[in-house]
Image 1 (cartoon, rainbow, N blue to C red):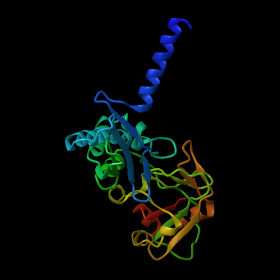
Image 2 (image 1 turned 30 degrees about the vertical axis):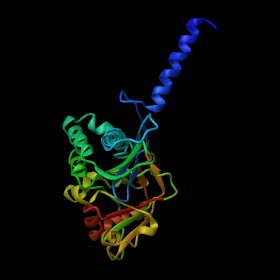
Image 3 (image 1 turned 45 degrees about the horizontal axis):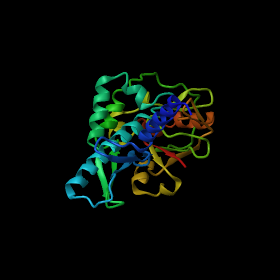
Image 4 (image 1 turned 180 degrees about the vertical axis):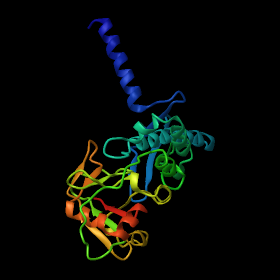
Length: 278
């Protein structure tokens, strides 16, 4: 075989090996897990494992070095995971913070202050860390809510006499391909906005979240029942909407009932809205 071909083959394999194993200059192998988002608690989780390429038992100082390396990689995963969270059906957090330097700095600061959930030692030469970023409890939700400026007039919906008044909105968004997002919009069949960040109390959203996500089995949870109240209006969403499938469409009759209920309109302005997800 031609010597140039052999050298090229060796070089490519060395490059691929380095990318796959993520070996650092300190002879540390880092394996990074996938980040995940728990929308029911607005918490992002990520983990990484750092391993010295040696068979000898490590001293405590070496384990601290491994822990630091694993934490650094985990923070990177937290950032990537957070950035890919949909804001709505069209934008992700990446697209928002790239246009706002101040917001990006606040996001990075929040991630650097992510909490260390757990440390474990899978082998005698490795350390695994699990970290979590709470979106609602470290001012991150506040910063996001107050940097998304949407101002629109009150939606015009045909009046429909509900016969009763409701104090919260529950929308079943299961089995329609809906992707949870931070600030989804709810539309009627005609494309009129029924629930949007433009119409809510931003102070409430910054503290408690714009949407409360729940699984059906968690609707009896005390935190959920406090939001639902005594007379929730229950709706089944027709379909997801948008490029990222992160908005919802409901029927016109349901939309009319929502907009004709004085208490319910006031409740949704204060974010008393629950989405049931898979």
